[in-house]
Amino acid sequence: MKHAVALEPGSAIYNTNLGIAHQHAGQFQEAAQASKKAALLQPDHAEIQQQLGRAMEEIEELEEALEAYTAVTKLDPSHEDGFCAMVFVRHFLCSWKGWRSRMKKLENLLRNKVLKRKGWGGTCDQPFRLFSYPLPADLTRDVSRHVVRKELASLAGREVEVPRVRLDPDTKRLRIGYMSSDFGGHTVGSLVKGVLTSHNPFVVDVFAIVLKTEDRVKAGSSREEIKSRVKAWVDCETLNDEEAAEQIQKHRIHILIDLNGHSKGARTGVLIRKPAPIVITFLGYPATSGGTADSILTDRWAAPPELAGLFDEKLIYMPHSYFCNNHRQQYPLTEVSDVDGIVRCGKGSCFPPSTVVFSNFGQMYKIDPQVFEVWCRVLQSSQDSVLWLLKFPSKAVRRLKKQFQSECRLKDDRLILSEMLPQDQHHSIKGLAHVGLDTMLFNGHTTGADTLWAGVPLISIPGDRMQSRAGASMALALSAPTWLARNLEDYEAIAKRYLSKSMHVQRALSLERENLQYRIRSEPLFDTGRWVLNFERLLRITWASYGESKWNVISLDSPDNSANLEPSWS
Image (cartoon, rainbow, N blue to C red):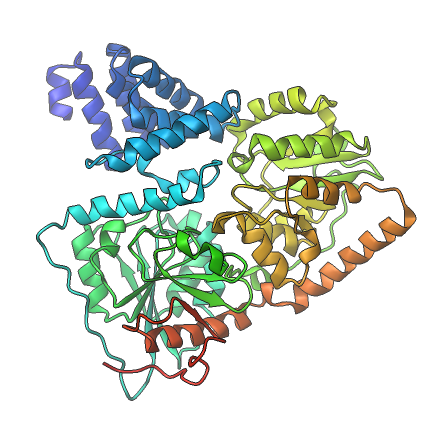
């Protein structure tokens, strides 16, 4: 393409194709440069603007991406992926004007057009992006199925043979593969690190199936520690889907655990080739895989039996929370005070004495207008309260401030927006908050665990899908159901209780915080060793029941399971 552009530098099509080529090669700055030039040459071409939006989004120039996607919807009102992309970026930037009408239009578009199209799409075919929208729960499931069906169509006429694998009768060790694009210091890698390094080597052999090799500096020490503890580090980044599936099969994996699902970095094309007899989806995508996995690891609170219709998999129930973490080992808590203004507002602390600090440490795209209105009403009920959020992402700050001014109608100093906290202290610093306010449609997962580990109660509403029930899962694993609200009105009432001046109420709340400090050290949520032991038992039960269709739920207390923890051989 470079040669074509050199011959015809004024061709918008050649320049946009060059941008696409750079993007596929991971050369995102070059992609942006070529896509910008194409849009300047032919600004009235919808597909050229769509590519510009993709390129700008990739380098996190979200305002320019939004401008490009908006142009697409004006140039071609029927452009499905242009509209889906515009909706996502607006939501990501907390641009909520017209939010409800956009959601209705998006639902109609997905049901009546996207799910019926046969060709490959773009943004509309990314179910992870639907998690923070108020769409029916079955729609996310159907979009996931749609993505998998299109991948399967690429295999038409080619049979996929499930590998026949048997356990070595001498060792009786299961061969477990963890497949991920993140084994570094980012979210999933940091959470699962304790699991991968805590497995009993006499019970399982652990294989890391690596979909992306991160920069050593960005990955930190986590990746190297994991690499030193696994039986094999299987690098599949440069392999195509068929080659990657064959590479996994060569290691005779019994159970493959997919940590991506349909999140960024996913390799659906690998999973549909059945690289292992059993595939479990877990952690990175808290919803059904839509057909790539046999089972999903969850718990009775995150995915109760009445929600089974939202899953195409068998439900594997952990006895406590399905959510694993490495907080106890990786993040020792230290006492922090804010006398020196760790979280600064001007020259001093943002938290005056006697001020109740409400907090949410998640990404801002998880905030929706409904829950934000409740946060405003809570703050309006007492002048001795502030809302503390992170600039996460910083590009959304300008619009969120405007929302605060228009919705809350309070002084600017009642909204504390701090920079991302230092990695080695962020849990302790978060302990300066008094109450955590969970997002409603897509709960805080890692950030929810961070809040609780810092000793801060987290108010949450269990929703009607797995991604909105993580708060409930973690609260119940801490034996702390009093923070769970039945609805938005109840959520608001619980939050306002923390503002009471009553000595009796304040004494009860103080005792609640003290109890939380005890629970995070004694209850199962942060006990990685206990989590791994239970998981290994469930893996053996899962393997022992391989090929049986009578169980839709696998758990440690299922009939016939507790008596048969040894794997069978085929």
